[in-house]
Length: 463
Image 1 (cartoon, rainbow, N blue to C red):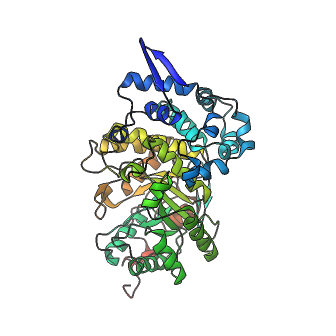
Image 2 (cartoon, one colour):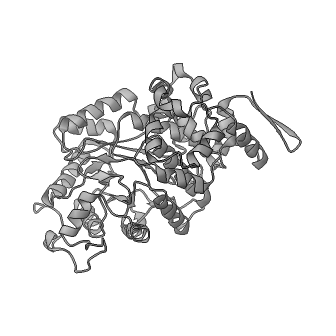
Image 3 (spheres, rainbow, N blue to C red):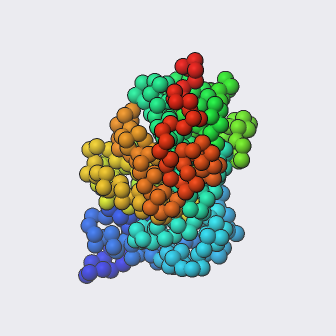
C-alpha cells in the first residue's frame, strides 16, 4: 500500500507504523530500536509517501493493536468525529498546507483539537520544517488554571525547581528564595524528591505549602513523587496541590512506570476533591520524553516521536495544568546531539499544542550528550517564539540532584525581556506588589524585599 519509486529505486513500506518510523527525522533512539530509515534517501521517500496518506487512515489502521493496548483504545474510543469533520478529507500533506494557511487561526485550531489523534499530528510534524513547527504552535492557545492562569498570550511561565540531593529543607528554601527573587515559580514550585517515599514526600509537601501560605504566593506546589505515593499522602491529609506522574505512549511503557489509566483517574478524582485551586481546577502535572518507551523495551515497533505524541492522548484525558517534555534528559542514546534535541523539543511542543495541551519544555541535556548551553539557548529562544507555556528555572541551570543541565532563573529573565513576555497575571501582580518586579516587569535591585524580612523563607520552626 505504501510504495514509491525514487532515484531509480523502489521503496515499499509495508505498514503505516513502518512508514511513520522511516519518515521520522533522524534520531539515535530510532536507530537503536532498528526502526529508522537506513539513509536520507529512504527517509525522503517515506516522507513523500506519508504526505499522500489520508488522515482518515489513522482511524482505521491502529499502529498499536486496539485489543492489547489501552492507550490505543483511549485514542480511538475518545475520538471526536464532529471536530474532525472539517479536515477529514485531507491528506497528511494537505493538512500541513492547511495548518500553515491563514484559515487555521487560533479559534479554528482550538475547535479541531479533539478531532485530532496523536498519530495524525506526529505524521504531519515529520514533514514540517522547524519554522513550520514554530508558526503553527504559535497559533495554538491553551489556557489552564489552578491558583494562577497559565498559557495566556504573550506570557511565559516557569517551574521553579529547587531540588536538593538530600531533600534538605534549608537548601530547598534557599533555592526557592533565589528563584522567587528572579520572578520564577508561577507555573509551579516543583521538587523532584531525592527519596520517593511517603515520609519524604509529606515533609516536602508541608514545606512548600508553608512557604506559599506564609507569603500568599499565587502559585501551586508539586512534589514529583510517584502517583501512588501522592495518593497515600492525600489520604493522610497532606496539602497536595498538583498530582504528578511520568506517562508514556503505550500500555507496556506505562506498566513499566507502575501506572494505568484507571489509577490516574482515581488520583485525579482525589485531587479534585481537595478543592485547593482558587481560580481553576486543573490539578495534574505530567512529564514525558522521547525515548522513554524504548528505554523500557515497550515501544511496540513505533518510532520514539510517535510514541511521545501518543503520551499526549493520556495527558489530554485528565485536563492537566501542565505537561512538560523533558526533552534531553534521557540521554544521547535517544537524542544524540543538540540538533536532535532542538528538533525534538519543537516537535513535542507542536504536537502537544495541536492536541490541546499546555506544553512546557525542560530545555535540557545530559553531560554525556553532544550538546552544550549554546544549543539550549537556541531551543529556549525558539520554544518561546513558538508560544511555549513554561520552562524550568533551576539554580545556575545545573540540577545538583538529578545531575543534568537545564535553564536558569536568568534564562527566564532573558527570554521574557527579549520577546516582551510576562509571568502569569496573578503572579505578576504579586511580584510587583512586593517590589520584586517593577511596572515594566524588570527586576528591582533593592536587595531582598521586606516581604521576606531579610531572613529567608524557612518557617520559623525550621520544619
